[in-house]
Length: 73
View 1 (cartoon, rainbow, N blue to C red):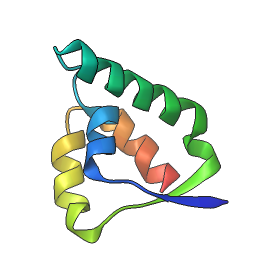
View 2 (cartoon, rainbow, N blue to C red):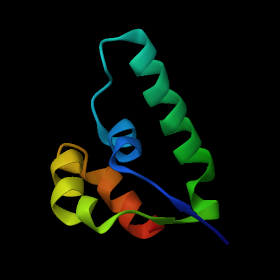
View 3 (cartoon, rainbow, N blue to C red):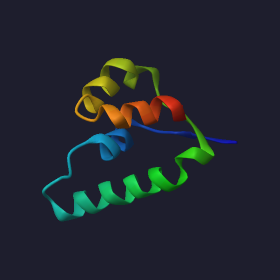
């Protein structure tokens, strides 16, 4: 299984509220679509500085996404 490094921006696109700006919103949607269709095929790494506290802050509004990330990582 291939491993992919993700940064908090990616997690934010997956878990954050849809942005008002149409370009940002389309980037979020592309990221969400990719995650839904492909995440099961990869292992994910992220920088220690962006781990628990940062991810929890980003993902708190979307607990179901957090559970998905935990099972994927």
